[in-house]
Length: 100
Image 1 (tube, rainbow, N blue to C red):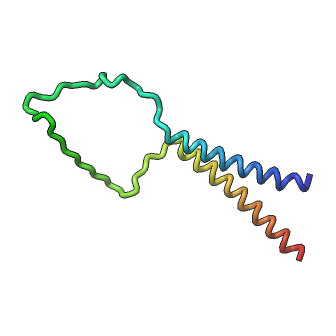
Image 2 (tube, helix red, strand yellow; image 1 turned 135 degrees about the vertical axis):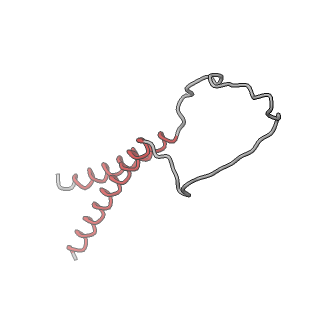
């Protein structure tokens, strides 16, 4: 059982990382459309010129990102998996150094 424990921790860390990446990717995919597109159609007012367009972008913060619950859960799973793998690596290096 002593030899199987590191392999189980390695497998668990790898599975947690893979699940976290998959969940994060799944959270980035757009969901199904909620309407047919005509629900909010409103004709233009008569005083608006046709084919006139303007684009104004303003951001309060340079790094604003929308994080959903899926993003947070995926990132947490990846971090937990990486912590397990880092702990296992430290344990293995400590055992190797103790043998010398």
